[in-house]
Image (cartoon, rainbow, N blue to C red; front, side, top):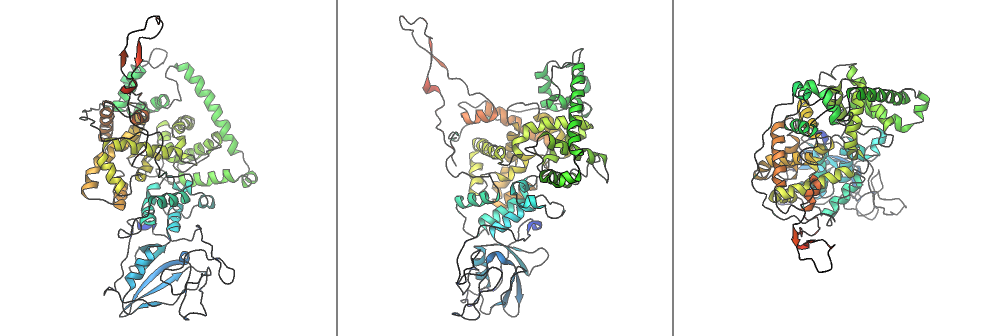
Length: 595
């Protein structure tokens, strides 16, 4: 290979991601460009940039052309695994291809040019320094790196590669640990900081290839209003209170066990949560397992019926023989994934720690039975995170199952294959943030973070991995009251971002730094402060005049009715209404989803 003299630079520039555990290489399929060579073979990918031989490449072998220098070569970029850097008075590189390919000769740069070579290569591949080896650069094509990162999302503790089903189903592999892929999304979309940014359409296309159903619309979204900078006024102060005690709970029950003054009870639960002693009883009401108006005797009958129903469903999967299971791939896949997840769910909690823990058995059995309850959904990673706190509080297999069923009724869309629930929530969160702080939203948009993908895990499992276990219990029981508005969890996201925006903007964080910073907030958040700020944000928005209808819809507030205009009834029209609506008084925001 021949390279011109560069500007005196011989040293190699490397790029290292902030999470080296994801600097992994694996050959996975991706879209291939078909080019017919002289022998009728297909060229599966673009050749190495800078190759002297422009002829198509044979996959897995070097292609020598009789019409060119015998030193000319080319190969598929998808076969390139790593580059080893050597020094011998000058820089030379050893290109290591996949096992099925014969590696090309060393590339010597006697007069410099190694950096130009790598910069050229970075236009088509992601290059990162191998962990523990300064002289080894790992290479991934964008699609391969992104697909590999999704494939390994769920393997947080080096439990090995996920089974074949999840290799073929990238959606499933996104759940539970989505935030870890964001660094590879950055690498795949943008490469190094010095590299030009890819157009938004290309970003959307690449995400759409890897995550089925996650379509990013670059056009204006219908049904959203133009939100301009609005004066929201001063955020009102908010106070919290102590948790609801056993005595206070008892005062809201009548002689037959019916709950009374339920709106007031929900309000004080929202303001302070519950003492742990009452959670086992109160969560059944909050989650809808027990009706608020039911008596003690009615609840006993309901519990007996639900117990019978649960064990009938449990018997369905317990009675499946090995021969039957071999012919039921979905059941095998669910069992395999559940067993894998159960073994690493909240193992530091005393309720689940240690080998042969009965809590793990219950966790497994409830999740398997839920597959019988909801055949269409089955089991998706992340559901064990939602069940774990419920089982911890209930300490009963049957009670935990039916409370989990009620919880999943709320969360179902988060785990559906098309991810419609997640897409909707991310759009809604972006809309709220744009209203609350347009300058911060514009900053995130300028850093390619306007889609707020770093909030994915927050929304997916309701902050389960961001807070301590006890704080999760407090947060969930507060959210289950349904107060003070619909989608209160989105205001919690806004509260966290509001607390972090100053640091993000003052430090001029880019895409990668924002992701890293948000991920590092895990286990560092103060739940009472977040709840207090989120409630204040809700009150601040609600007091805003001319609130856009899209915001009112997200938070479940009916837009205020326009003031009536008096008019004089015409003669002979005694039955006509003296009131008419002034259309000009209505909010005149035109529908558009703007960036």
